[in-house]
Amino acid sequence: MAKDEIVKMGDADVTDAMQDLVGWTLLKDRPAIFKSFKFENFVDAWNFMDEVAYNAEDMAHHPEWTNVYNRVDITLSTHDVGGLSELDFDLASIINDIFENPSK
Image (tube, rainbow, N blue to C red; front, side, top):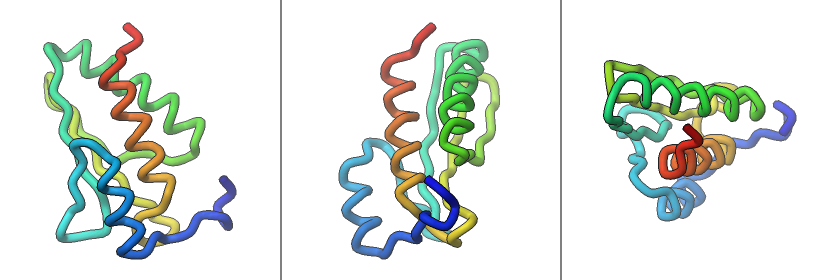
């Protein structure tokens, strides 16, 4: 999706998209969605981040994230539109799939 095709989602669209997204929460202080992932160890967390990174790069849409040992916290927002876009929900769905079906 080209940058000029990215559109900020309205409140109703965000509400609808959130219903299909397991485990993510809408942040109250900014237009973004958040989820925390927990793993057995640091290596599993790192492998997850590695796989997410490849998918995010393919989409040219990158998460804000932190990693502390076995936990990865991810926030998604589309900075180019100043809010949430379909890119955020598409990437969140991919991230959920990666977490549920690790390749390693």
